[in-house]
Length: 208
Image (cartoon, rainbow, N blue to C red; front, side):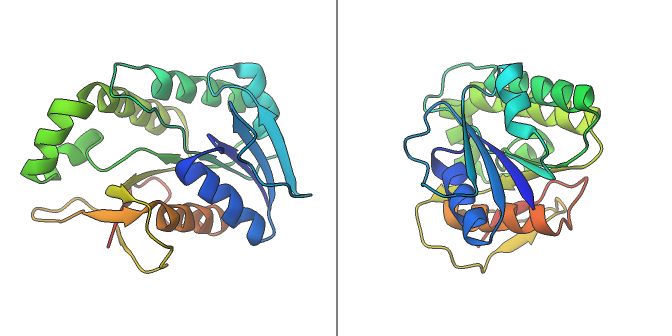
């Protein structure tokens, strides 16, 4: 299948790109830097920004699934997540396209905030409050403006190996525990869902 990955040159996005290529998919990879991306005959690099409509249009051309894995390196206030969501939905609407849309946020976004542990609530309040405020808006924009979406909320990310053994929690419940998960396993989940979506309209949390 043809998969577009927005934010493909680092972290989970790069892991998704590599895994999807290994599984035989054709990839359009949008990122500000294309150097980290592997050389592969089924990979089309699109150097650009998730907040530039022209770049996004080039990246999602013909896509059957779009994986949004953008991130920021600092905890400062940002509108990257919500701005890119609005642009992506506008581009898809203009093209009359409706690919499966898998959007990476994190456990603690939206209504999952109340289900986080006390240490994580303190961490978010001290360091990630402004970033997650925009992720909240990103989730709202996607959920209210599109029909075929999954919003993926992993727990604390690590650089561990891909195990393919993790829990998928698609319902919020009192006492639930969402801890660590490797970026590789998050990538495994996102690529697998692009192939066979089972959580459409849901907010799956990922953890070991």
